Amino acid sequence: MILSDKIPSAESWAKMPMYMQIGNIGSEVNRTFNRKQKALEESCEKAEELCQISFERSISLMNLMIDTYEPDNLFLKELCRMKELVCEIIVNDNYTENIPHIKKYFNDHVLLLRAKEAS
Image (cartoon, rainbow, N blue to C red; front, side, top):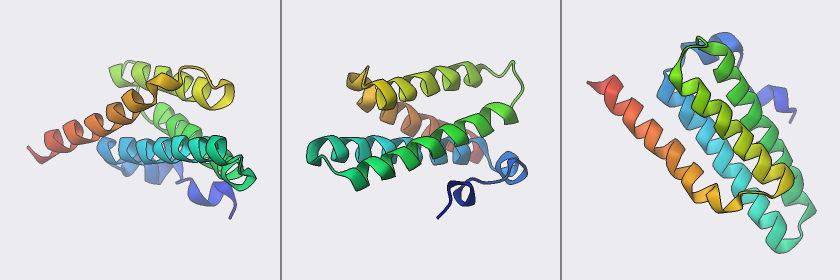
């Protein structure tokens, strides 16, 4: 499957509620971290390849979100920093101790935004 087949269009992405966007990004980031861990533990080429695909997709989704919202949206600054951290972890194996915090960050945002939308 081609990566672009899994990336939503900018129009369909913009129609999604923010919590769904963050949930999609968080799922892909978690998938990336899990595949990276498997690749490191098992020296598995397939896991490394799948990690790369998930990594590219997570960055693409983050870019879509960054392009969707106004520059003054406070969450975008956080998202840009998160993107930098994910890149550092996957590409350079730096800051790996932050992986549990990043996973929690995405999960907490989804819960918060979902609760806001429901009220």
